[in-house]
Length: 193
Image 1 (tube, helix red, strand yellow):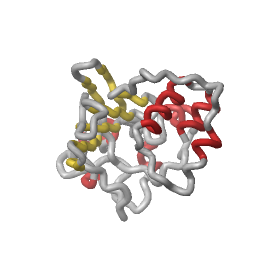
Image 2 (tube, helix red, strand yellow):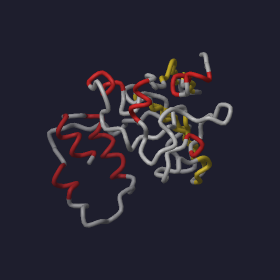
Image 3 (cartoon, rainbow, N blue to C red):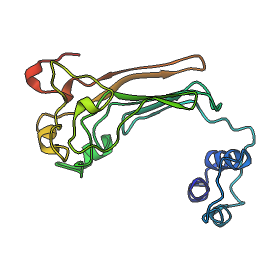
């Protein structure tokens, strides 16, 4: 996949990342290993000294991924607080952009450390509940859209239920962010930033 992206976008970064991964032996021998040959584009250069960032804010989706290193025993955290399906979908669609698989999990986070999952997201559950995620319950109530088998998109859209990352900064020593998930809860709770 990475070699395909490198070829399609003529991306030195993607080609360099693929080079780094393939040379460190992270691939498993599978029936699809030949695709590395099929998608490799010798016209796209690579940089052997390329270093992948340990932090990134995916602004459209409101996702942040941060880790202390790329070593095997690193600690990594992911954080989510953005409009379901992203800012682009929010602008493009007047109604439901196909969000019934979404979850009521704004301001949720996951942590892995030293090859162990410390705080995980359960993924799919029968009924969408905020309490099934690593985020905040207010006075026993979860976020808009919870409580049904499918995410209640219309209820969320009615109240403009969107979390957002307010600030993000990453340096070589630390990273930090602030977010606002107050709009993702019932208006009766009268939450304020």
